[in-house]
Structure formats: C-alpha cells, structure tokens
Image 1 (cartoon, helix red, strand yellow):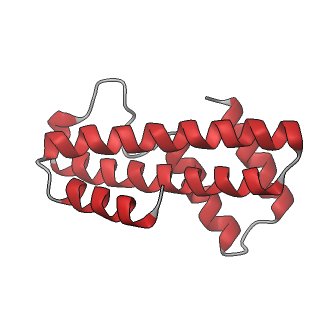
Image 2 (cartoon, one colour):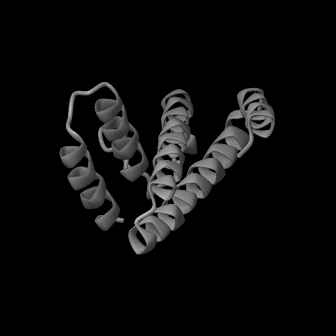
Length: 124
C-alpha cells in the first residue's frame, strides 16, 4: 500500500466512531495477513528474498492493526466479537508483530525468527 493511501486510511480510522474503527481495523488486519500469506507462498516457491520482505512488512502492518483493535476493545469491550481472544492472547497477527519486533531489535537470531514465524503461520 502506498504511503499517501496508508496515511489517509490511518486518519480515517483515527476519527471514526469505535464501531467503524473496529470494522476498518479488522479489514486492514485481514488484508495484511492475506498479503503476507501470498508473499510467503511465493517466497517459498521461488526462494525470493523480496517476497519474504513483502510478507514481513505485511505481517508487521497486520500486527499494528491488531494492536489498534485491542486498544478500541479495551475502551469498548462490548464491541469485541465473541470469537476474538482477550488481550492476553492477541492472536497470530499480534504474535507476528511481537516476533518481528524482537528480530528487528536483534534479540533473536534469523534462525529463531524463521522457526517461530513458521510455527505461527502453521497455527493459522
């Protein structure tokens, strides 16, 4: 997603009513997870580093959307869908974002990152 569209979308989300924010953030998270899944599939099939980078970026964006959803749900618990986990279990997007953060800060190795990333994706 290009930066100007992303910026506009973030502004739209920020000023939306809580119900609409949940809807927009859920769409954002799901779109980024789908993008990540497609890029990972291409990377595995072609061994292309570019697709891995696209997937990691999409996973990071999905994690950010999930974190924003959690913020909305903390303030408006009645908006949390019955199937969504509580704040303790953020789900795959949140785990992926946390994993990416640990990797980018150098707290886990590339090998550890890839192992855990695959485990999270297999759990979907």
